[in-house]
Length: 194
Image 1: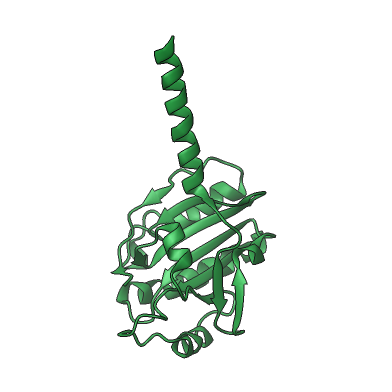
Image 2 (image 1 turned 30 degrees about the horizontal axis):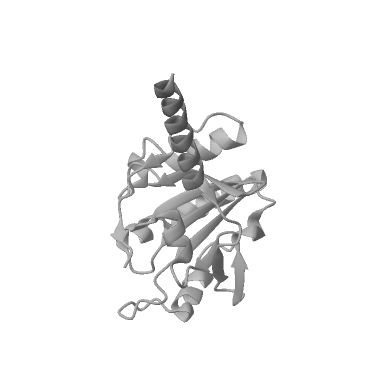
């Protein structure tokens, strides 16, 4: 009997730990480079989902996805999904990705896609983001957000014409139709965040 209680306890601990890893605080800070304002994830409470796309101005993989992300943002805007590029390179001394550089980059991007800076890597560390580009898809819950997907945007970084699986679209379509998300993680391909 004690062994049975022990196994139930272990299962409960694993479940709680999994929940904790998928829970994201609304108070995580970001910086809107176009409006020069500090924000938190709470700004997106009213959206069905928020898609955070970690990016870099100089990463060749991130550049390949700029237009694809803009197209998806336009595609899902009417369904209350918000896309945002997030750049975590502002404080690295060797990078030429200052807030000013990010603002210039944001001005050349689709205005439907926010451009945010993760100045102190607070959000990157909380979400365990390692690469540019890497996507995090969050949905609002009463306690904050639930992380429903993390990883690659699709299965063909170098050529949009050869994409067979678009992981972002698969996830968003499942969220918007109240279906189980088919995949919660897919290893991203890109430049390592320093």
